[in-house]
Image (cartoon, rainbow, N blue to C red; front, side, top):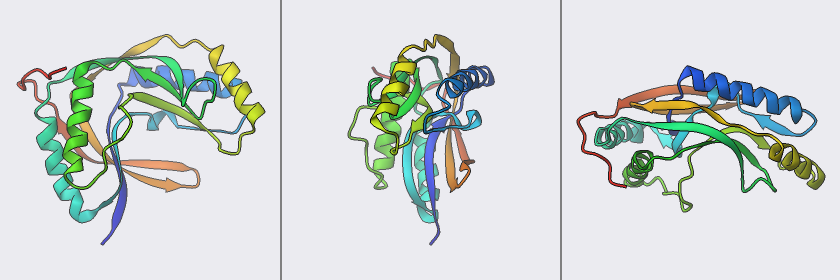
Length: 200
């Protein structure tokens, strides 16, 4: 039985992608000497759930579960802006731009997490923190390099980059290649304007 790597995500509008690409380009120039793997702007999206390995058998059930959950939620908007890092700005390993999390986004992510758990996909132990990943600092980076990356990030200000209206959720396949990941959209389902309001 064949298996794919998959995740569930929200796409970003073109204007937000353009602004993110500009921020990423500016950071890449400033951080050029340091070992950071940058995400191509076309691959930047808001992940709701990373599934990992999914069998072809589970794929059919998964799309049915996903559609059933997503149609219980109304469309909504979120805004994009501010620069951050995991685990924090002093020890950056993942460089990201933040997403303002309205309760509708958190309710949608929580519902998808609970729905996919029925198929055995483990729930995240940490609270969901929506973000848009720009780059990942190499594990081989020295302590001095990490400190310098931290200093440059803290000197960089990223303001409001735009807002996104969410009306669709997508299931993506991720294929890893030496030159980076290639994402293929497998399934799209729509939020329901007639759904009752999400509870905070």
